[in-house]
Amino acid sequence: MNKKELIQFEDEIAKLFNAGKIRAPVHLYKGNEDQIIDIFKNIKKNDWVFCSWRSHYQCLLKGVPPENIKKEILEGRSISLCFPEHKIFSSAMVGGVLPIAVGTAISIKYSKEKNSKVYCFMGEMTAETGIAHESIKYSRNLKLPIHFIVEDNEKSVCTDTREAWNQKKLSFEGKNDEYITYYKYKTTYPHAGAGKRVQF
Ligand SMILES: Cc1ncc(C[n+]2csc(CCOP(=O)(O)OP(=O)(O)O)c2C)c(N)n1
Image (cartoon, rainbow, N blue to C red; front, side, top):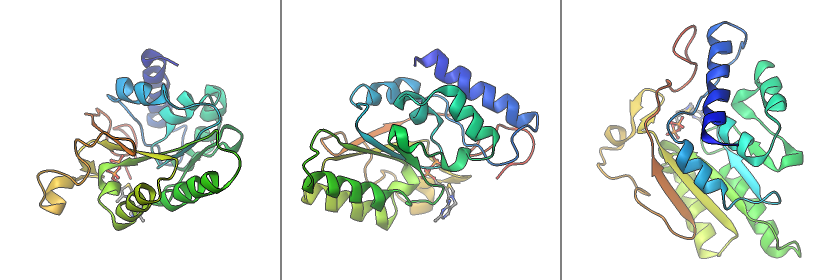
């Protein structure tokens, strides 16, 4: 799936949401297409992907058919999209998937099935939580087959993340190594919803 197709998918969901066809929260991406496409060049079919409430792009890039994703979203499940047959899982809890992702990486490390890796996406506010710090530290120290992606849109709902922590440079800002990819993007969508109707 290319950049244009990703944007088209989100724009269609935005229209459906604003028209009142989706009666549950949606969290849309915009402005990070180049970065996320680049990350998915390394993610294979057999790898595991863990996401937050914002996961439409990951599902599309993992190979879930767009019509299946749209169906789930229309049924109100955008916030926690899970497609086990495609090895992609999401949680609407801040930090919710992180220990599950780490546990999956532990299980790969100690099983005979060595041909898969875990990729775990999180926002920059999630990356500042204790559970993120512990998950990343543990994964590095035990050399687990996992890679964390920190996506920085500078906001936690409506709060400026750097202001909230009184911290000019965030904990993983600029990190790009075997265990972490950090990138910044500017979205044109609000935290949730699509600018009209009810916001969460
Ligand atoms: C345990 C928990 N606390 C609070 C929330 C409410 N909440 C939803 S998203 C969010 C902000 C997360 O910001 P960030 O990690 O930067 O991700 P973004 O939404 O910007 O992609 C918060 C506080 C939640 N979902 N779960």
